Length: 84
Image (cartoon, rainbow, N blue to C red):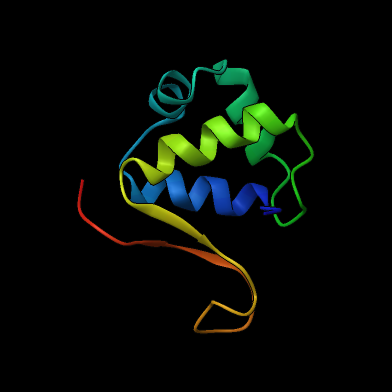
């Protein structure tokens, strides 16, 4: 699923992680997280395996990414489905 830099940043904040913690959990460099978050409201373009690692690291702590059709308001978002 395509995600924006803002979604990654919001998901990380929901999870209570800093950029280094997310990078370590996802097995990517901290600069990867920094660069992805700089995309702001644009869809992040990255390697599929890198994106999957970030999704998995955030899913492990209960974060899910929402598409337009899933968000309770206009637009995309993130949600915490369980407490870590």
